[in-house]
Length: 311
Picture 1 (cartoon, one colour):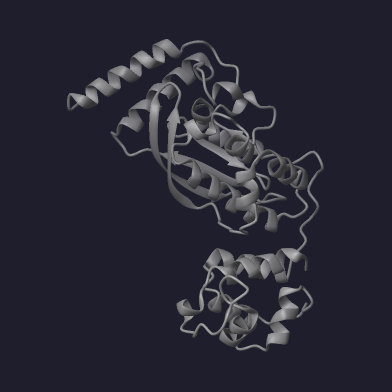
Picture 2 (picture 1 turned 180 degrees about the vertical axis):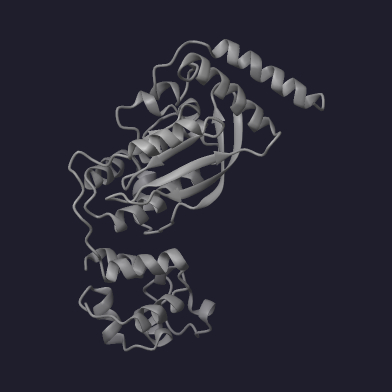
């Protein structure tokens, strides 16, 4: 067990006050949140035992104790699983040093999902595969190795592309930590974390919080440089049978919405041109694409005028 376990437990303790769990606040406090003795009392273990656990010196922890600590810390399901992995890490087969690759049939499936943006990411949030519409939205093809973390934290245009950038940043870091814990030997993981830590203070601060989140479902807002604002729901699915964890993500617009119409325009041009229309902004910086932006923008104006006229 590494210090990762201790840092996770300390950050979880820090977010809970004595009043939150019905304990009296006694004397001056040198720590934010619960003290070790208070957490131990809530979990029904001795202070000495809990201290050894937080310091990584208690290798044999029962499921009952882990559940008790998780309940005392109000961990959600993902955080509880994260705690179990930190206490009892399971080593998977070491992945290829050249990185992960999707099966050809996965790419074929993505290619046939021509009405929805869809892509697959791996343990370090490298984007491993995508379809044309996803490329038209996010410009993956421009990078030799596109990465969701670099796009959010190191791309100067990211704060314009993501109107709710703070939420996107928090989610991205929490998903990265979840994937990293499950795939600690993923090639390039330490290098990526070091690069992001050096290049972004926001990343350093969020990484230090030790938040974890599994990529499942939610909503996302993007400000596309050509078609404008896109509001989508997303659904995520694990890709089974791979040496490392991979996740397939699809963006789903509300049927008949302006976003659905705009994606239809992008899909039409992506299909006819063989790639996305070229434009200025974060997507263009990540890919070389044909100059058809003016025509796409004309189509989008037609969509917006039709929406303003009530159909």
